[in-house]
Length: 298
Length: 240
Image 1 (tube, rainbow over the protein chains, first blue to last red):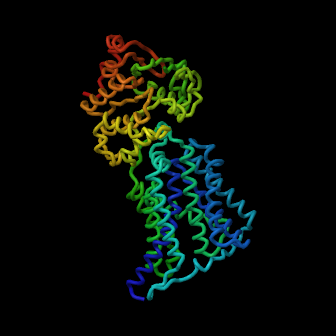
Image 2: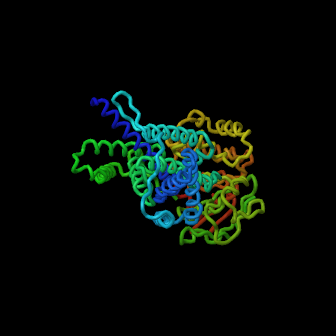
Image 3: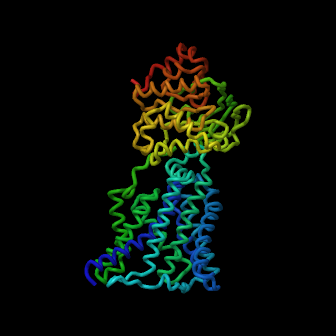
């Protein structure tokens, strides 16, 4: 394999993992933009979707249907979370909302442990997601191609939604100034529910791609992705969709780059280095790369 | 048209309004004056349903607003143009205006509403696809007012429309306010610039620490020595 091919291979790896981070970060960021809530339970939506898919697969449902049901389960779980955990405490201090998100996480993870045992289970990856496509010397995992394709489609649809539909524009308005949005008569409940639904839908998609990537599911599987998504959205600048996407891809590139550059004995500390870079970035750009200093709100 | 009866509103733990009663008659322009922290914005936010009064009544065409959601209050035709403009900076001028009309059911007439706003503020038309944040302060105030007008308000609540603007822009804004009044829009105007406000107001109330301490016609308050001393001697710096 030539140097150019190696580089291309690594870029594809970076874009593919970055895509998953971006999709997760969008969900976190949209909700944060409107509610100032960092929803750490967002990761558990991955788990909900993946287990739903797994159980249906074990029951003999074809992969496509099982995945769609898994994505639907994530979406419904996200909506329920909003309705029953976050809506009742809306307007409470940010810390109260953050703690509630921890409570939701603990609840969902322990529920999963009771229902499915704490051990991980193999996720049967269908051939479609488990092959390697060769272009000359280049070997590309079909999962990477599919992750990238799905992300492009979802980002395209999301862009159409937030620029062309009334609910989408309202969502951007609400994330800018919730009180002003209310003064216009924007239905804030609907906008917030829509933000949760979209973010949870994307978490459902990530759940399936993630499970296919690691080949297993477990009750705590959402922890690492949500942490990565959090880092990604902070890198980009919390609260907006473009920053979340940018942050996702930067984080993906950073990880692949470090993995390629670091000597074998340091490689296990890759994540620590990523966080170190994050800290350095925040020292110079406290609001992330695209973030601007926030104005005080009434 | 609008009546506040003994309205008490808390802002956090503090009582910001301690029993306010005022009246705005149809097609009139009423000014609400007072120093910073007197409760002017709290009054408007209570009318709009953003803050809920702890007691008292707010009647609009004899309907009590205090239990209503902001959306329903908007549906009744009470539109607020908030202090500090609060336009949506990441949204284009057109999107901002569209948000102003979000509760309108008759989307067919949306073009007419746009045309009317662009006729009042021709500048906005030139900036139609620009992001709100890129507009100058004066343009942002025009956008904020245009956004409120998109809903075709029956009662327009204007909070500090002259704040921080150059005198020439203030003149433009006040000409528009007078024009709206001529066209039959009822206006409740909160202003720090008492000179300007009293010149165009039919009636005015002076707020102090959450209470109304003085009221009267615009002309009578202008010649009132108390008002002169407390509110007219100090012209806000940005309007010098």
